[in-house]
Length: 459
Image (cartoon, one colour):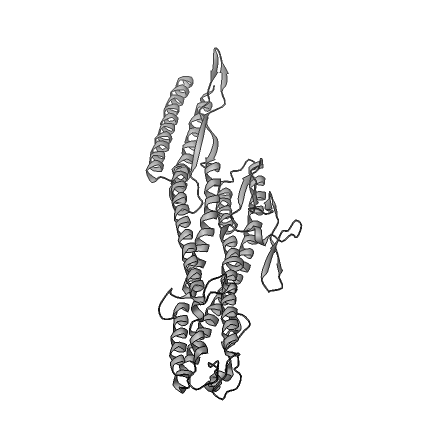
């Protein structure tokens, strides 16, 4: 090897050390950057040169810039992020539904409204001709109707809010799917040209995590560095560099339905993971079921109460009119004629003065078991409904806590592999600084040797 070859070894060593210092510096600068996986500069001996008796290495070279990642662990973390996001969203929705129903007992609750109804009609049964008692009974019936109707309307508004959130989430999913497909394409092109696509892979990690949180889907790595993404129990959302965005349709009731891009199939009921799945579950299962329960309660009370009042006589001895307007919880209300004229309230089964037997039977309606309510009374129906909601909320809270603990554990494992340690990077800086100094010293020695050789030749 010529003397100039030795200078090349020193220069190459200095360049490698400089790259090592840059990588360590980049790591330290991105210690808090989301999705960033630390880099490691892997070194290899220079291309060996044949000499008598064997091969001799030619300094040092860069083997590759390695992005530190455990794809299996990352995939498990993405799946758990999807579960946790869905449970968190479900917990949020259930908490709101519980709030909409109000307290289990006390002022503002359905149970309180039922109790007020019973009390008012019990008092009316004692003084059926008393105008004040009549107005109080009608007011209690109106209060019960308003409580049921108001709760239903609040649930309906919440369902509308979930509908808007679903539409927004579908848009986010499709945007991220398009970005993932584009990143796949850019990564393949850059790595095929011999480049390092670590920054693109960092961004892709964030995109995949966000998609997993929104849909609960799973990403699968391909042979050329691309990544596909599939929905749980559903179609492929991204295939290599091709995005297959979710399609939508509007049902008869005005709610959005999610369709597969591949065949147009309705996959709404198959999406029950991630934030999108939880919002669909809240809209189609949780809220819809509670609204149906209130419809059933309102219809049952209307049928039973109206059967009593229409079989009785009012203060003028005329046949009674219905106490409630029927038609589900949304239209559940006291007949306006009674609000205008309390004398029309029929509570006598004989028409005789002082007879309030029908009022007494009306007072017992909240505790009357009916087939429409599954053999339960209105009071127990409301209590069981509220208790079941509390159980669902408690189960969601436990599941959310377990999932959060799993994520924390897996993130700690991931950070031990991909996370940046400032102490470790400081050690890397010192290592490459020493390497740079050694290379500089080597060049300085070779320069001295060259000067001596030139002087000897010059003589």
